Length: 118
Image (cartoon, rainbow, N blue to C red):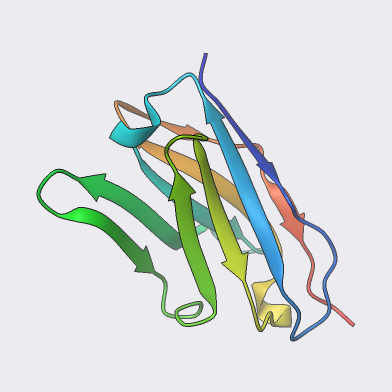
C-alpha cells in the first residue's frame, strides 16, 4: 500500500519560512518523480516544484514561476523523503500543500495546510 504523509505545515507570518516534509512508503522511491502541489481556496491545484533522478540526466528540479528563488525542493532516497523549504512566504502562498509521486502509478498525500498571515 502506497502512502505519502506530509508534515510541517502551519501558520506562518509573511516573510517567514517553513519546511514541509513528505515521507513515502510502498514505492521504490528512487524510481518516482516527486513533487509538491498546492491548492488555494477557490482555485485549482497547481504545481509548485518537482524533483526526479534519471540515469542520464541526474537529479533535476523544476519550479513554478511564483516560487522560483524562494522555495527549494530536495529529496533523500535513503530516507524516502522529499522536502520543500519555503522562504520569503507571502499571503499568496496560502494553500493546502500536497505531496505527489509519479512513476508506476500516481499517488497523492492527504495535504498539509499552510496559512500565511499576520
